[in-house]
Image 1 (spheres, helix red, strand yellow):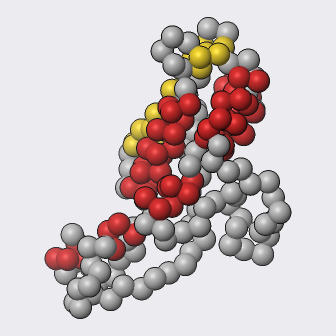
Image 2: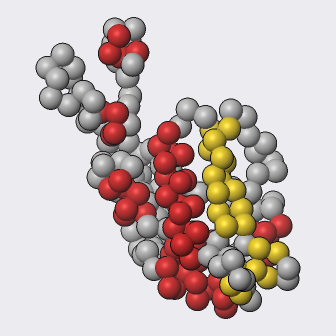
Length: 175
């Protein structure tokens, strides 16, 4: 809106927002390749992750990263397998998990989690539940978190996301 009103003469926008300006000769769209990276960052000080490290491997299999790039970024990106893909330290031979919900469920079950009557995994009386926090103003991250949470719910994980103006970085479960 600020760009359209003339208040700004330059703006970095999401691929979805860029569609607003496509085909309008009043605007010039520059396509920039960046090393911008989005991923779920787990707080390893949290007991859930300390006691269940293999869950992260399972979640990597449960989240459809290709669908995220297509739907949120409109294909303007590459599927991430780590934060160093576009620099000299990239290791293309690093383990890369593909979208495989059945493998994700198998890993979770190997760790002793069982589906309860509500279709959510449970272990030792606790449901498999966590929240991903997103900072206000980062719509791309919020959209990606929403997809990740839906993918995780589809396999029996009670995952949710919250958009906040302030985040308690030390005590969060994930971001």
